[in-house]
Amino acid sequence: PRTRFHHTTMTAFDLALVTLFFILCSLLHASRAQTCPTIPTAEGEININALSSKSYTAVDQVANWSFFVKVCANFDKSDHKGCDISQVVSAFQKPLTGTMCHYLGVFNAKTSVTLLTPGNPKGGVSLKYMDGETAWGFSRTTQVDVMCDETDSQTFGCASSGCEEKNPASGIINYHFVLKAKAACPGQGGGGEEGGRPP
Image (cartoon, rainbow, N blue to C red):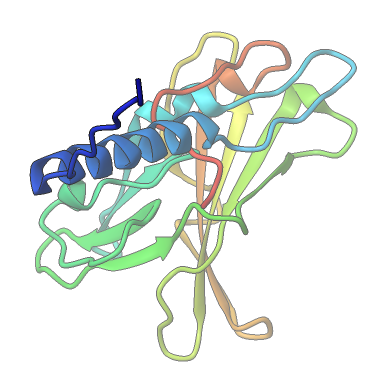
């Protein structure tokens, strides 16, 4: 006897389920793939991705700014502290009084991680974000020097030179911060839950 094949039609609900499945798979893949570059050294790998689940805040009372920074990750749009920033960003500033916010860098393919001092892995690493908001003809970048701290104090603040470093020759305003963390020590880091290999 002939084998009969039954043809079924995919309903709109079935199609929505399939679409949702592929979206969730894509998001899961992206979340797993997204990490900051690691640095192999003779004393062990430096991997600061374990810091990606936290956010850090610095305040410049003189300049009237609060700065919000993520390490190896972008903020969710819902976590922009009331700022009207339409895109995902890794660093932004908000006035202590007022609402005129600016984004200072984005975690993407241009993000770099390098040793703070060449040849000295115990010193920590420097994380650099590009593609911040432009202002007065200047491009904004953000630099976070993550210093090796065996006590893992997680202290965060502006660099000794100040939060804002304006360089007219290069046309760049660099926002410079220092974070002390054990993850920046060779062999002490690890993967984060929310970090990201830049899209």
